[in-house]
Length: 267
Image 1 (spheres, rainbow, N blue to C red):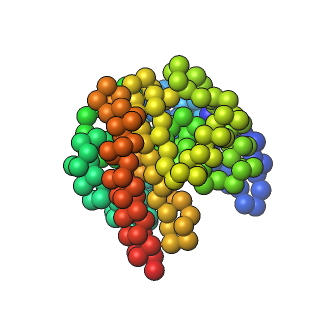
Image 2 (cartoon, rainbow, N blue to C red):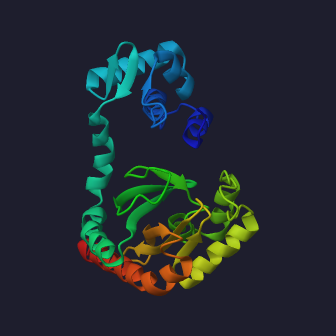
């Protein structure tokens, strides 16, 4: 299964600053997903772009370390793999600070709240406080979505320099996910410029029919956007107009509170 990370690994050349075997090990780990939680050796090799012998050596190494199990020639990840992601979360005090603020916000507005960071052309969820299930996509910490058509993504993209933004949009897989999805680079750049100007982002059914989302920036002491906070709801229950008029003030206040806590933590 080709992805941006696989392409990057394929294009990199071994050198003093690049450990190819380590990169290949990460590709093996990435080959597992919700659609492929248990795989044969051949499937892992195919998804990670490795030979069977290479994939086998990596799988056996991961098994010996406790990150992979092998049952009846089907390989799967173990819960220990979560340690790798937890190392990131535990090293960033922002998420411990953000969670109670997000929980209080959800209690006020009765809609789901999430925090995410930008990683290439995607956003990655780092914290989530759900209420109702409002999407057909199952989201949790570590889930990825395209940045170009999400409120969190456009909020994070608005912090990029113009040249970097245009390059990232060009590199994005801009799929027409709904009849509302904007895919034209110039139009997207204009919408993101508006987000930068107003200080918040709103997406009305561009990611998924019926889904409305609004996002605000989380900034550090220097004012740099380091993450984004959003609330999401169903259009038939929380229209775009309703979210902007009655929920945006609470969202902005929550994002500002987290930003102040982050600044105080690092002062």
